[in-house]
Length: 318
Image (cartoon, rainbow, N blue to C red; front, side, top):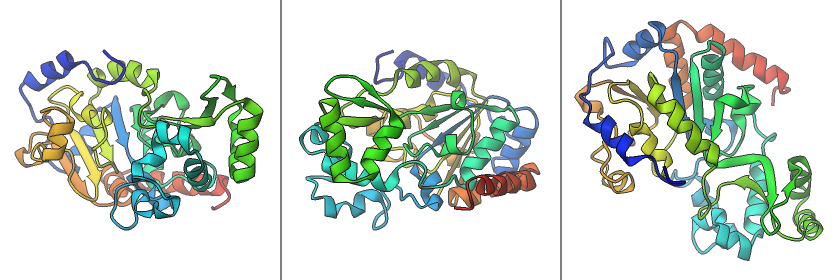
């Protein structure tokens, strides 16, 4: 497989398999029953929507999303704040923005703790996240179970020299403002960047390696809080075996075959087929409400609330 694409022949094989609905009912009750009957290799895919209640805005929501609030940075286009070419030319917007979203300033949400609950029950195969906020790790999900598809702030590199820089030092410099990051770059002889994947950069090797191992074994896919508009992450929904149930928890339906934009992005892949009642289930609500609903169906709601409370107490009730 190339660094940026999923194995096309494997995807084709999964598309050609006959779809069999393994759920007793094509709804949340059916998903809960399926989990209780022995699902043990659950993969969770998350986007910015799982972190909204932590105070971190998503990217694309009109009026409140990050891309709608970047006028102050005088960018040529919103995505430039995560463009490697633009960063090399003008790093100040990213450093200023990074100061606002640095891990440690926000706490995990109920959605993160639901994923933690799956891990505690030894039925989480992996969580694949587009997010760079490290809230999965802060929720005490083992790092081996987390794949940060777009990187995060846990490591940092000087892009001129390739030298790895202490991430805590980088955090201190960036949080101190313009004088701090200018001093940092002078000290290390070039621009220092947290290892977040910018547009124009390769995704982490670990992402490609683990998805080849994980997705063929997946027995339930849960997708939460993502627009499914960024490749190659969006294509992962079709990388699970064809008969595997898939649950979308999101404010609106995304990833459906009729979505013309998505069809172009994922090159005629299948997408969700909610109307066919073939094992694809959508729960159209915010992520926190959605995980509470499924936890209640599972009989795990008290455990989830206890995890949330314990986490808040550990983090000082932020």
